[in-house]
Length: 195
Length: 195
DNA sequence: ACTCAAGAGATGACATCGTCAACTGAAACT
DNA sequence: AGTTTCAGTTGACGATGTCATCTCTTGAGT
Image (tube, rainbow over all chains, first blue to last red; front, side, top):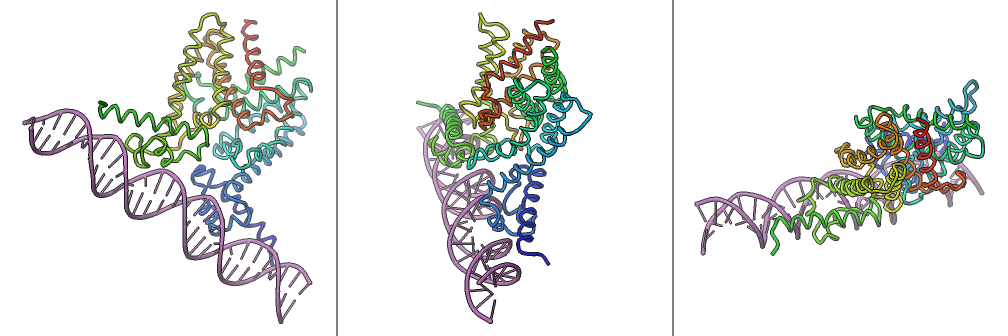
């Protein structure tokens, strides 16, 4: 029927799914090994057959999210009929959308776990290099690094403020995340037009 | 000698200090009510006389940090002999410095606790309105809101990436947080010069 | 001056959590 | 067929947040 390896891979996937779902619905506090196991159809000790500890499980969830975002970035870059500026805007909005619809997952993606602080940064690499290439197409290799770093930082901050619903404060005059991204993209794209 | 109210206020302050110190040195995991109590010279149950629960204590720590940052912003704005652009840069760097030297406290300041998600946003108000006034001095009332929101978001994101030491990645060509802030300030100050 | 309510703090207890050690059973290998 | 490997279960332990209860000092009312 099913080999042992297949069964193990299936439960591993089920554990990741369960953890991601619990994170989405109930926040980080809801992700307990007991709940994850129960939702995956196993018991509390089972995760230890697939992950070193709880932190490793969470890192795996975050890494998987970075991978799917990397896929989206890659597809976006290959998309024909889009200008470099449009691709740049799209990439930033893809990141912000994660923060918008899965805020807890988003926080996890940008958290640096005490055990292995670089783990999630490594998982983010592909997403970021894809985006870097898009920026380079717009502003040239020379300034691409600085601008890409600035854009990713800014998008991250915008998503963060929006997640804590601070952007909605009337103090900012009702700006949306898209407004801020557009302002930024226009400034940079405009600058590149001057060269 | 000392009245009861004074003594209570003193332990309340000691609890806040203890929590802040534990947070700085050992991260959020190190902040346990037992450890906080011990460091403040009381036992685990004492905090419940001053705070509703652990979350309320952490919110109080974060709020106090926002208050001192607000003081710094206020002093910076009143500083004579500084151009509006310099004040703007200084305000952003003040925020980034918190992320640089007290990363755990910084994360707390931008976290939205499940119990009262708006509590820390309220504490951040004064800092942000002070900064908003500085930005208005540079770019005018009209665009101040949008630019201030963008700048705070960006600074937040930059501090976040720096905290997870992702800015150090050679992929970005060795940019510093100051570089990114300057790039941003120049773009906005330059734009305002055009008007 | 005496009484007594109030409240800060201590303490015992409980549920929950992450984690480990020992155990079980079935699949995979020789 | 016998043996090993390994996914999964179960019991136990220490740590933690939180509540109920108790103690004791302070401070106000008479």
